[in-house]
Every structure is written in structure tokens, then in C-alpha cells.
Amino acid sequence: MGKQSYRRVLTIAGSDSGGGAGIQADLKTFAAHECYGMSVITALTAQNTQGVSGIHPAPVEFVAQQLDAVLSDIGVDAVKIGMLFSPALIETVADKLKAYRVEHIVLDPVMIAQSGDTLLRADAVEALKTSLIPLAEIITPNLPEAAVLLGQADVEERAMADAAMQLAALGCRNVLVKGGHGKGENSDDCLYLKAENRILSLSGKRLETRNNHGTGCTLSSAIAARIAHGDDIETAVRQAKEYITEAIRAGAKYHIGHGHGPVHHFWRYWK
Image 1: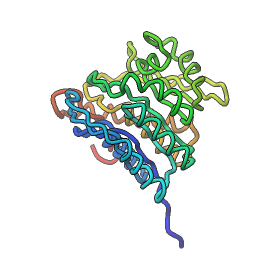
Image 2 (image 1 turned 30 degrees about the vertical axis):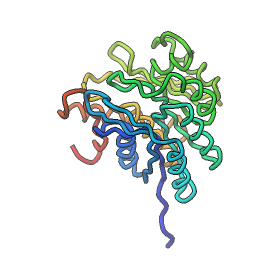
Image 3 (image 1 turned 90 degrees about the vertical axis):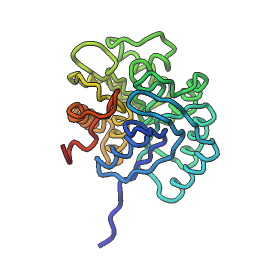
Image 4 (image 1 turned 180 degrees about the vertical axis):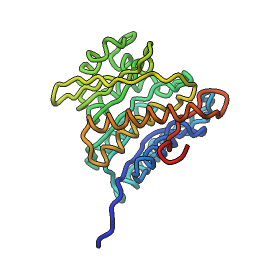
């Protein structure tokens, strides 16, 4: 009998010293979905449940070295991209993904932390739109991020479908606009499947909790993990939304830190 193969998922993102978001949340999510997780660290952050007190970007050349090390040897079944910070970093990541012909890319256009701290330089937005978004199988902006990418003051919940289609025009294959920053008792997301020109509304009950740090990182990582397992985009997104909903619900029962705590990534395995 031959040896088994892992489902390999790589995260390209920043490190969260508090463990609730970024690389740490991504690797927990991959493990929870029975995937082999790898990481390329783009920045170190001094961060906890209350906010980000410092950001130390990794040298672009070293990020390229990390990408070469992983992609030339281990390879990937899917890639999740989070915090990238600068135009040079975005372009380097895009060039490496093209050079290694990586197909399944989930891009979470991280711009602002849960605490309100800026995680993407203003001059990097254009690079994100021109260099990286066209490579993505799916992008997963929240409402404020969608507004920035579209150059609008805001995107209202009722306009999510229009925003998703406009974002798809930037070149990505699918768009998930997340409604977590909206109002009301529901937290509905909007999925646009470009090839089918089909809009799906994914409904969900809003869960009241302070433990919502890292929800965006976790959702996009879960999508990447499901794609690595062979799910199509619609199935991957639905499965990931179910996972993050339960992770938020389970995490709400815990107390950690003095600010926005994390979700419970391993709710399936221990309470």
C-alpha cells in the first residue's frame, strides 16, 4: 500500500502574537479541517485582544525566500492570503504564485484589524487590485474592505450583490462579500459565482459576543481548506460559513484577555 498524501494549505499572512488572528488562526483552522498547514510570514505584529501596538514587516526578499522554500519542495493544494501591508510585498507574492502556477488562491484583503488598526498601507490598495486580485479564485472582503476596493464611501448591506459583481470585474473568479459589519439580527453574506453569473445569499444569525477576533482570517482559511479537500467554491463557502458560525458560538462561552477574544477553532474536538 502506498503512502497517503496530505491536503496541503499555505497561509501567506502576518503573525498575531495574541494567537487569535493571522497566521496563528489560519494554522488552527487548517488543522481543524484535517489539512497540513504551512506559513509564509509577511509581518510580525505585537498584538493582543485589545489591539495592535506594533507592526514589523518582513523584508520582501525574505518573504520570497519563504515562498520558494515551500512551493519548490512541498507544494500546495490551496493558498490563503491575508495581511500583505505594502505594494512591493503584494507584487512579490503575485510573481511567485504565477511562477509556481498556483491555481487555488483565496484572498482575504485584510486592511483593518478588529481593533481598528491599519494593516494595509493606503498605497498598496492599487497593487492589490492590479497584481493579486486577478489571480484569486475567490476574494472575501467585508463591507468596509469592499468599499475601499471599489473607491466608495461605504457599501450597504442591500447593495452587496452589486458590490460583488463590481469586484469580480477586477479579474477574480468569485467574490464573497461578508455582512458581519452590517446591522440587524442577521449576518448575511453574498456569494457571486462569476462563471455562472449567479448570486447566492448565505443567511446566518448574528451572534452577540466580544470574542470575534480573527473571524475573517478563519473564514477564508476554512474556504481554502475545503478547496484543498476538493470542494467546489459554493460548497467550500457554505461549509466554511457553518464552521465559523459554530466557532463563534463556542468561543462566546470563554473569557480571555480584556478586549476582543478569539473564536474556538477546535469546537468539533473539545469544548
